[in-house]
View 1 (cartoon, rainbow, N blue to C red):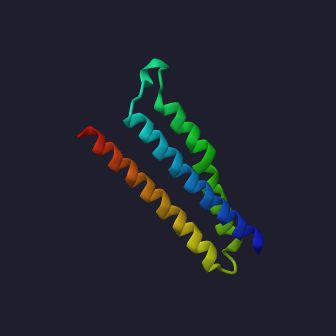
View 2: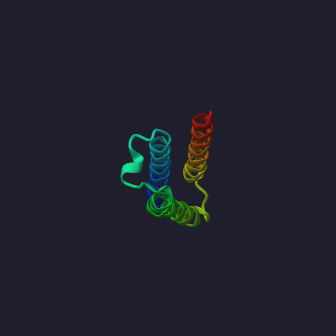
View 3: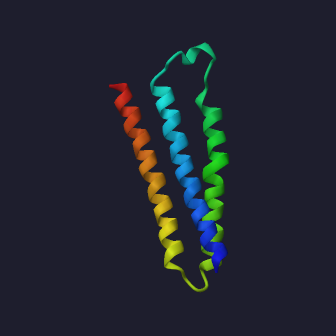
Length: 103
């Protein structure tokens, strides 16, 4: 019963890691301090962040859900929901930063 809890905690940590990476990327793109000097492109970095954090987080949460599905675990369910809320809040912050930078 401990494996699925640890996997849910790891998924939550990877979700937080993804949000931190995306907010950092948006801040870097909004404040162009000599960004053109080395030709920064956001798309490859975004794909790298997705493959490093949110894809493994999704797999961790899915495996955790599957392992605890038979007996039910409120702790795992709360961690999965919290992970989704954190990702949604992070995406909302990125949209806010994007709209703020255009004005």
